[in-house]
Image (cartoon, rainbow over all chains, first blue to last red; front, side, top):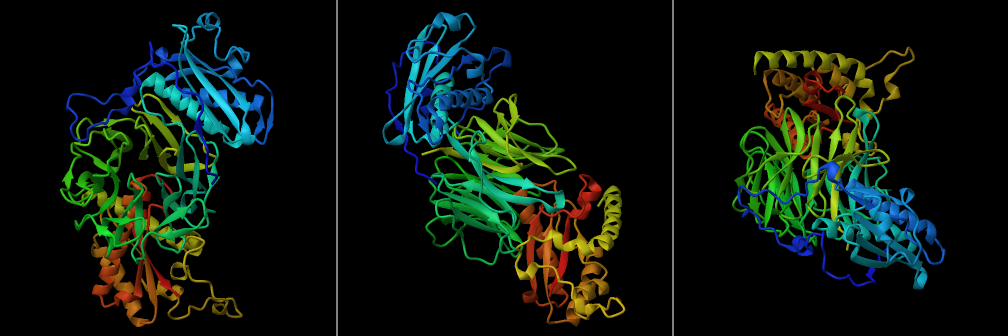
Length: 456
Length: 178
């Protein structure tokens, strides 16, 4: 993969804002296990009828220049479209893309015709430019205006290789999303998942990766052997996943740059359910010895695995708290699958899920405030609870929804849905209200999504 | 086990038996393309077929194993991995054959139904394969002859999404390594 050069070009404009949420909200550390019982997580709840209308005209180019990714005029329209799609797919905004609004002039980019937009019920206006830069690069500038108050809210600029124009669009989207919601960004991130084809008893399962909006899709494995449960490393350089390439379930770490892979540990025992620590220095995995599965931790650099659980029942999976100090995992030591928390050295194991049903696949939010899970009881549903087990909420209601993974900002969850009968799978996304649910576009069926952090 | 569960299970066993007869020739498509030799299905030996096109079962072959035992598959209740009386009877027939052919090794494949999460089902399939292995060991089969592999919910044999199909899919299958 190419190393991306992405630099801030234009300093942020005045911090004085009228309608936007103060930007410091996203930087506040979320205390873990110390949340007041009655206080809900800060969820952006927006009635669909009250969505703010955001207009996004084509980004203007002063000179239409050819690049290896298309002309700057074409890229300007594409960038505006990607930003509109991102904002629409967040469920919070009614974004109106370049095909449905007027074209603007280059001089208009920094001084919008407010009266035009005010006459069209527009709340927010995103305008921008694209021009060629040194070294065959392009510079993209984007500006956010509050139409009601006729005021510029924020501006940002990025210089990228033309082929990385989507990253510039995602960066603009992130800055605008954060400014308007007070939440941390999440668009400039990637997803690893399993692409599936074929009938239920002969499913071909391939490791694949894509951008958060499904673009830049790439298959990593051929499908000759079954691949499962991928996880992007925090720096996006490696993938952990399970493969049956030697006939047995084993975890491999795949190097995206060299294309090589190796076992994470030499053992004749099956290894599965791989996870990274937030700093990327450790790998959690599950290993069965004589049929008994426990959770282990090993340094990425190698060394001796540390066994973290030792119950005679199934202990499996696991997800680190963002500070790396705790691990939430799944165990059936009580007789059925339930969620437990332990310190990252395996000490102080205690159950957190109660109240009927089975709980599986816990994933700690990158914000630390919530744990997502699969609840099994009748159907399979995705939900969230606080790290102390309180405030259980179910976000989906289908026959089989499974394996939640968090957006980098901890405000959106992806999971996969299996159709009853056919066994066909698809990747879905839901916000924390459970109201805005949508299917992700993937070229084949999809399962086991794993959402990485904001790209470095 | 409740009366209802028993009924479902019995139906499941009957169905599995029926499917087995028609499906055994298709078995190799359930195996990953690039599985290692230990888990690869037996290759049909053309020498088994004489000039009159009559099948002759070679002693010690996978065909011989299947013809001598009561079943290559045992079944489990939801989330369970215990060996019940019926399983014991099936495994006794497998052990008898294995003791007759001490140079033959086996692979036991553990499976789960689709109504479980992926990682848990991999662990559960491994549990089931090991329960099967341990029972065969208790009957005198040496442990170093037995390999186990869990497929979790990845390789259902019954394709429906109902209790009957799930009962058939919660299974451990013994395959000889030829």
